[in-house]
Image: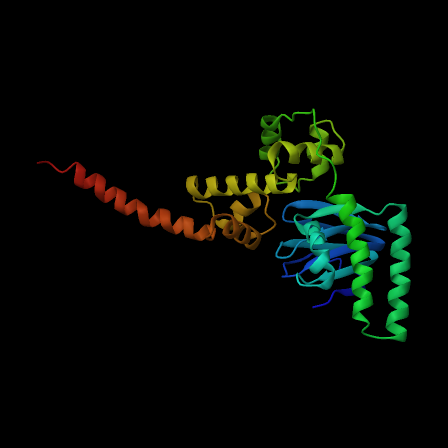
Amino acid sequence: MNSAFRQIPLDPVPHHHAHDFHQIVIGLHGQAEFEIEGLVGSVSTLSGCIVPANHQHHYAGHGENRQLIIDLPRDAISLTGHHHELSRLFDEPAFFELDSPLRHYLNFLLEEIQQLDQVKPGASLQHERLTSTLLGSLHSRLTERQPARGRTLDLNALDRYIDCHLECALRVSDLAAKACLSEGHFSQCFSAQTGMPPWQYVMQRRLFAARRLLLETPLPLIEIAALAGFSNQSALSNAFRRAYGHPPSQLRKNISNELPRQLGQVAHDIQPD
């Protein structure tokens, strides 16, 4: 299958979904907000975000905006064959800024696509060549950084901060500020120390909190979702199922089924001889 390019505005009304293809969003005008599996950020002119396949994401545009959206099936030419290494770009969600060379290339790409569509509609092979160059440039900037060394983060302090702010839309920049580091340096230090990106760690803390509330309180799922920082009950259920293999309602059901059995066993054990 082939990549697809779209230039569209994003609705100011928030939407959310997940899809089985990768996606890159680059701001051409105005601003939009994204939350990708707990990672929150803005896409403004000449910045963008990476949305890996099957990642739940929420988004909304602000006023007049226009975004370049590139849909990339997993078997796209630009991600397979001798380009297979470029698929690593979608190992995790990320936000990025276009540097000067990439800004020039983006202008070229947009003009080239416009000409191709006018002269030879459906010139998909050339579209894939253009896409491969863009992906290769982003790949070299985002996935080939040297891991940071020499700085140990206070994970206990970060855990306390995250747990106290689970109801908020935690950003990587918030955690970086807590650690007194730049966002880029913090992300490198964090990944080197924990083996996972900050967004995934925050999601893990949200899931731990939700599981604890499910086990220890009678709160309804919609309240637990809000307390653990999920945008809605559906987002909690999807994340919980991916992490634990079953929806949160199943955990509650297991508890309710187990309690009568345990009470029955206690009653049996205290029966007089």
